Length: 142
Image (cartoon, rainbow, N blue to C red; front, top):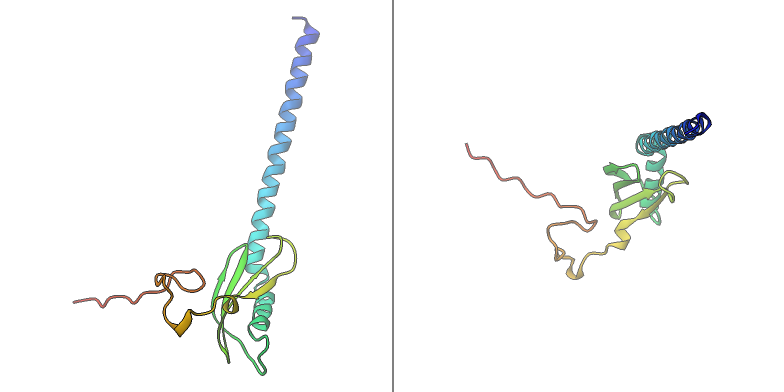
């Protein structure tokens, strides 16, 4: 193998290593940006989303003052239970494109009507919103 061919191979390997290093840097920056966006979605917009959730819970009720009784947040959505004059409303707020777009809230209470007769749903191990229900703790014996 001539010296020119060896130099060509070294240059090709060097270019491949440069591209791979660039791919690793871009991937790392994307992961860091997604992490920062997730933290912002949970903590950075809490007050604005709470105002939207209160408005959605009070929709169609005048006068109305919604009081938050439960708050769950993830990078993808915020979930609230709001006490209003008409009862407890379950509100979910999320962005249309996970980390982009304005938050929009939906009233999950309207979509999940109680079963006929107002009884306990057939799957008594979970609530209407698909979350496990809290079971009473047994009394400790001393």
